[in-house]
Image 1 (cartoon, rainbow, N blue to C red):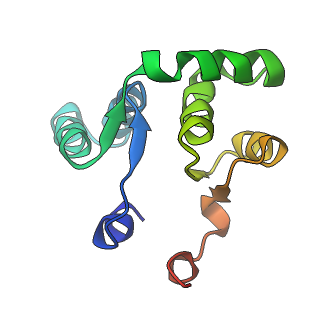
Image 2: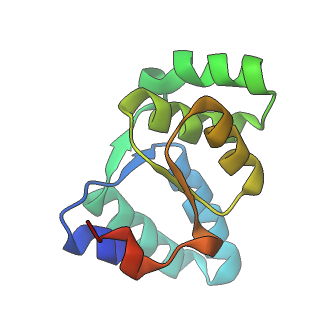
Length: 117
């Protein structure tokens, strides 16, 4: 999916703390060397947004929704920048629906329909 977004010139925004999640998950699935390469690719290919730019919005979401703190940074960034959120977390997806944040549930996503006008 990320390659397809890149091919279409679509900028990918990621809270900087998301890089830590990528490092942890990719290390569990592979090894620290490969994980490091993945993290380097993410750092050079996507726009990492510092948490201090999202903090106020993330805090408001946490207070209103009671969702996991880590999720609030992704939700806050999507809401603040008016960009869609791609997630496979049904809880995050439902919060997006309640807050009118454009979102796609990855498990239901058909790549060919993502770029049709």
